[in-house]
Image (tube, rainbow, N blue to C red; front, side, top):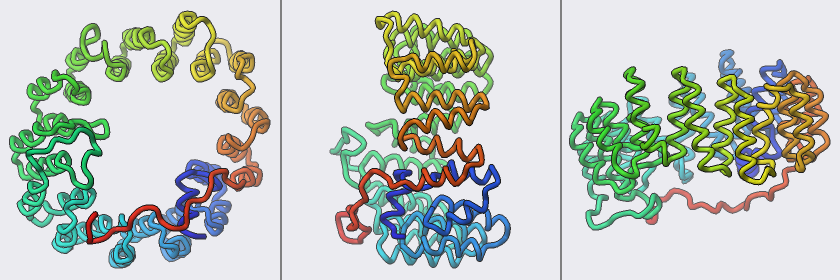
Length: 453
């Protein structure tokens, strides 16, 4: 085995046993298969088996399972081994492995190594290691985490403040390389909040141009943590702060003010009327509190406004199913289809199948699926098989999938495992993956002290 091949197969989930099927093998009593495959280059089997052995107190055996993978230098294996060793209390061994990869120049190792040191009483050393790399946003984030542990927040704050240029405004999340001013403001605000300087943290975050990262708004979260409801309400009322609307509604619901949370979304004229995501959040809120009919009405309005958006139709269909109103769901979909001329492509059609099954039985749903113009395709077979397996007819699901190529090999293998036909499942999973192997020479730069970082 080699690191490039392991990385490629695990990232693409091709030519390997994926983690969900490893779990399935263990759940179905096939631990011997997982153990065997762990020694044959199957990373997800090796990781699962090492964890099983560790839980049994067989730490030496667990380390032996992962050793060939770690020996390739592949970071995923190194990180997993480090995590297990740390969990077993063998901290010095974990530090040694992580340090070796850092010294070899792996781009992710310094972050992991420094955090590991900080967790085990060596935060000063970690801080000194990270300080020269403040321009790397990942390492700057680690530095902020470590700073509080050693009381060196002001040193970290000074480094961050030096990266905030008053004359520059980012126009997107990837405007600047490394630690851009927007990220520096966010990290500095985190430091100030930890010091109890809440007003300063708020002021810093109000200077940011990009308020939302990864679908979260740092200022909204900060205001919610400190119970500053009215400030959060005012912030959520500003244009373009959808995540703040969501956080305010979450906070009010947590405080037991369900009506207030609903009012935030404004069923008639508020954000939910224009934003399908806000509408979906509102529908979930209503459904959680026993107001399913109102929830369906909210999503029906969105489906009417966006008849071709599959995720909105799907949300409406699932909501009707969850609320025990599959016939209403079908009626809504029929009306939407009629507006589009009555002909619906598969990506908009398949979501009605569970509704049909709930109303008329699985056989009726399967028959309707097969009658669709795309009903003989491999992607239709996935949905048909899911219906059959959900009804306990796993053998029939296997028969359906076996008529198609290996693009649906994971689904087929899973059902074969359920039937105890493990060898057949492994044979399918071991078929050569279609995508080409990655280049042997790394295409990303390794970590270096020399710019650019």
